[in-house]
Length: 193
Length: 177
Image (cartoon, rainbow over all chains, first blue to last red):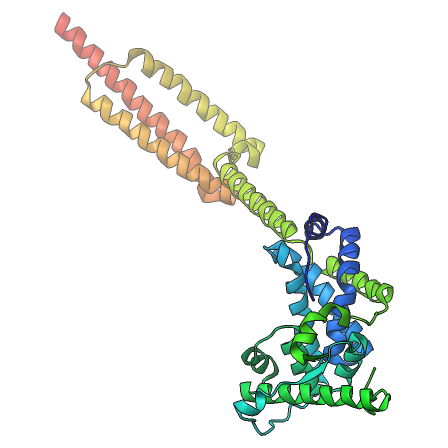
């Protein structure tokens, strides 16, 4: 998610530091949709994602006076959302299979999709991915984390993170190709939301 | 047209945010939790003000306590009983009268008289010490006895000084004659 700043947002952040409830609500409205989508892609559960959203905003508003660089609010909030999402998925015991590592050559095979494909459908298919692969794809491709950071956050090796990421891309590509070929939208039986 | 998946995701990142939460329900939860936290966690400035207040109160108590020790009300024998008060007053009267006499005729450079004057000073110091004891113990018979004894001793010393003065005057008269 790109984060834009303007004077209005900065003044809202300053008011939030003083505990202004109206400013908190306006800042929440500004970020709730983006943060909810980050959370739901990681948890794949609407109810859990809403809990994450609530906890993250409470933490952010409680600790906002510690935030020195006000322009970094969006990134800071997103890190809180991501960390909280990982915590709740760990509680749900997401299993990260220590899959057989692929060689660098295999990992470099390009995974391509039709550029005209709807982002809404991509979002849908990301949620159909298995839990571990989905989290790694979201953290790497959408949130810009490095494989080493992902490994550290999820408690897996860097090479597992790389391999799982490659497989997630392949699965995503396959689901998109299947829909293109058959016209049917793939729904994973275990998908929660 | 085909596009590399990662590049596509990067370019379409914002358009992927398609889902909506129940924003007002979530906000209600946030608001309630913040309100609870506010009740539980008083702001940092409150603790700073409380700490300063405590410090000021403790410091004031310490200073007042120290000062009040120094300005402690001295217990007089009259505070213990009227009889003791009267006795002390009459002795004090004698001491004052004799001291006035001494002051009027006090000669200079008389080593014997100087010695007796120093005796008086020592008696005063002893009196001050016993006065403190009286403050701490109030109705303490030995202390009361020593305090009354002080006056009697002081009268004796003053009598000796007067005697010495008289002796010196007589001696001077003899020399003059």
